[in-house]
Image: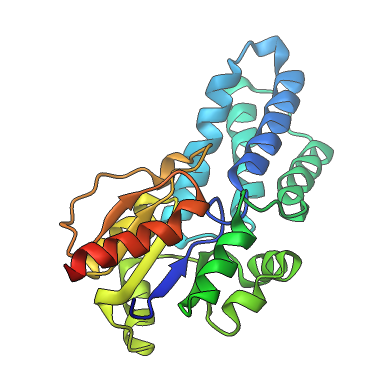
Length: 247
């Protein structure tokens, strides 16, 4: 099989991510319930408001590390204004620290991450890492997970993963679209841009998905569009597709 170029998303494709955010959001909700218990605000409403505020920030300017903790503050201020409960500076500081704590967790690879990357590299494929977020946060994960040995200098980090940014990677590296794959858990930032740029896409649904990632697919695949449940399925799926395409 001809050498393939394979771009991997990182968060919730190679390394767990959403579940750590969910844990911190639960802690935030517990604090809000304690502070606002006399006002009987449903915790589900608090979580919904926080998610709405966080989503607005991401859609406006991408994945900046301050967005998540600031969404806690804005939610807190919203309910303070709504109920008339006095705002407390110590509470606000506690919420900021809680929100920022999500970036300090230890990395946790998805099952078969190392085995799959090793197998693809051994087959001679060129691996790229394409991830969204703040560079220093994402590079900490890359280093801690030891991913440089698979991706070397082929690591692309942007606050906003868009079709245009993916197109720039394809163009700048002169990638052959018929032999290029994008693998990730986000329909919005991984799959749809891949289909729009005419490369192959492999959708890896996350166990816990963020609403931001769920969009309608409105692009016609020009190559493969596969859905897999395990990283270990990727090498065989690519081999089978290329073999079938070759006739």
